[in-house]
Image (cartoon, rainbow, N blue to C red):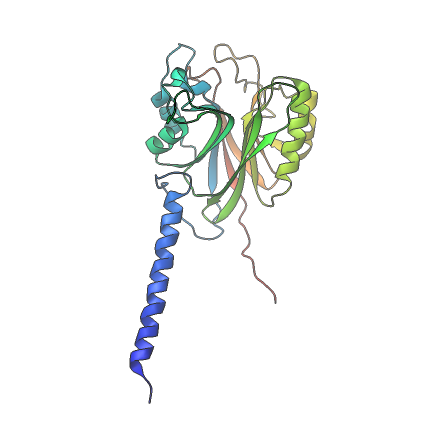
Length: 295
């Protein structure tokens, strides 16, 4: 005779484990990067779609007018309709210059995005019990950030520590590798750091976007390795200078893409909210083929 009570009990356990697993997955996604759930998420596998990316050195949200205004930075990002944003010069409880705010967290909450922060400078708090004082880079994303790592880059002597923030973003089933950096002020250091960025990115397969303030103009010798592998989305434009914001004369902010990404539109945004101009690129991701195990 079949013991129906045992069958029902096993079924209840299975249903309970299934519900618990789903709950854990939801908690994981909503807690990844920050406590704000990202907007416009669709996790269907392999959906080809346009993606808008941005690079912006926000100068800790202080504009050329000397005004600290994080809301002004948020409005620029919001108006751009960018999906993934690489930010440089981001303060995290750094000092009174930015009101000791956690700027990345504030922006993510304000914009309803996932985020991750990378502290390249990490100092002791001014008083016991206060937050550590940090300065570095951040990535905001409307799509889930499923992996995040900050790689310290080499430096020469007692210069500022630089890093490469390396994340993987799930864009409707397509895994995009997005890198954000702010390079050194000397060409010798940048030459080493660019080679390290290329080496780090080589460990990932799939579409890649590398953004940041590279502190070098396109014709600089240290930029040659980057151009030999990745596509500069502003390469054919003569009006893409980003620094300074008043009568910009240099192009030192970049968006690079791998060969499997097509660029359909680029823009340099005019604003006085920082000492750099933000840049955006609308790109198309190739459809990822589903993986099948032949065994």
